[in-house]
Image 1 (tube, rainbow, N blue to C red):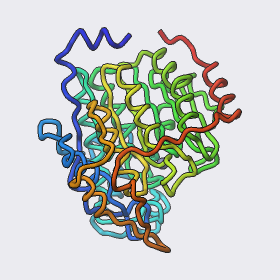
Image 2: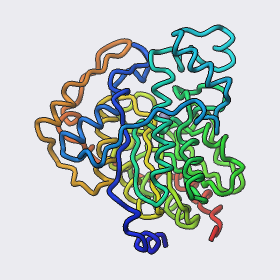
Image 3: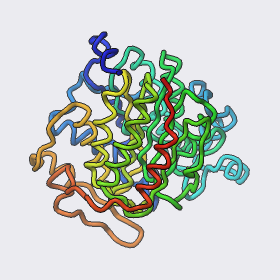
Length: 385
Ligand SMILES: [Zn+2]
């Protein structure tokens, strides 16, 4: 379906491009915040160590100006966010009004510049994908951000800005798929009334932000699949084959945005889902041929080893690079140098968190509830064509 469109314009699909920045390398939300760990810098370092990130595939992310963010965010909020970065403190009124300076959304050194950089990547991606292609921005995926307030570690909502930018640059029908452990409440808020934005989310049930019910319909284009703790790779393969791929194929999108949060794996401290990273890579690969434009974003991911390995494997998958069974010494050195100090103890890596990118698959039985919910949602499929 989309294949013939791609074949008609081979110049439109250059090599995948990686948008990154050094701003993430030493940035931390604070000593005890889950986002104290390095993530994007590990992906850049590992990809370079493996020879997967030549200069012509790397783009340094621009930083979005506040005026470029008003497609979703209010000027008052953007001004408050910038002022908080400058002052490194907030008033009680700003804390209450905009949820800045809270335990989840703390005041930190780059609290405007960092999210404005990942938002800049999403805005640029929409422009670069005008004629088609594949872009990876692992710093993106901040799917909880709201128009006038920070939410769930997200100060800006770069997936919303990406979808708006894709649309300004020629894409009409956009499919947003989110496999983070948490529901993308900010994205659903933005597009629940937009029949041209298909939204599919798989997330852990009864977990913050506790939105994303299976009964949410939007205009018929919103599909939420809350899943119980213990989701395994076999169940995710069923969800991919029976729900995600048929829905996206029916929708015939001009562009696909995949939020590939890394917090649904066993090793992550913020969810009780138990996927291996093979499950994420299977989704990344399967969606790639279904639209002319493909933007893959990061998202959650709070174990520095599992998030670095998973997201580096995403980049390998987008480029059809073979993932080695055993990493060469340089790449092992990057993983070996990571540290993860928690409130109670220092975590020590498992040997395979250093030696390989690929987890052992975590296959298992398909639970009746998962199968029933997939069938319930799949029954809502309509022919969009
Ligand atoms: Zn998450």
